[in-house]
Image 1 (cartoon, rainbow, N blue to C red):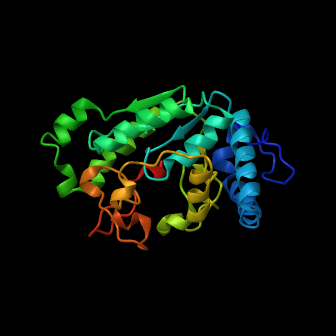
Image 2: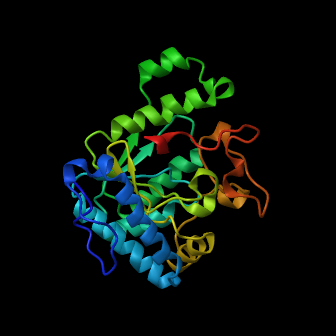
Image 3: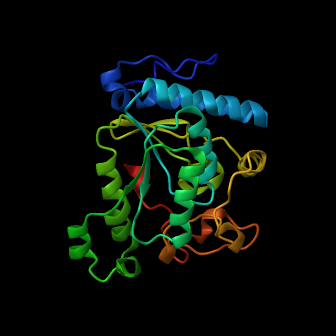
Length: 260
């Protein structure tokens, strides 16, 4: 499916043939996304929330039955999940249960699912045979973190997304690195990726959390600003970039799922 079903007062996208939209019309997609980014950047907080609701509602309508949310249930995940639950609580939520999560993350995943009424949270685990062969001692993260992410995150997610035409991520531009120029809509290997919070700021995230009394991840108060698997996640000092605690001491900045 394409994005033609998304209707707003602003020219979010151009109509494009559904069958070839994600691949053949990537340029149009990004042009439309740039227009949304500009609109989002000039909005007040309340207007930005409403616009984000409309983007999520439009995506749910356009990709009915073929849209998923991918969530780490990490430090900033509650905002996107709360927004999505208010629009389409039955949207499948894919959680990559890598076997290396903090116990607090697993508890938080259950808490948010229950509190927000998320009806279809799917715990996706790595293939047992692959783990037995490639990471029998469970310490591949020490020797080759890219390979560890590949078998515990990238491959399982790729399989979990089979059959979906689009998926929603919680990435934001303020997180830096490769995310600095993040559009709201992007083409990704034959599917459409929706980044409804791309133009949100950290102040927006915090304001939304306070206004709606969202439960914080238990590790945030311990200095964890971005939370992934425990071997590759460290707390950060106040004022440091949130994702600087991920894969500290290496050049690695992403797990690879956003290249799917």
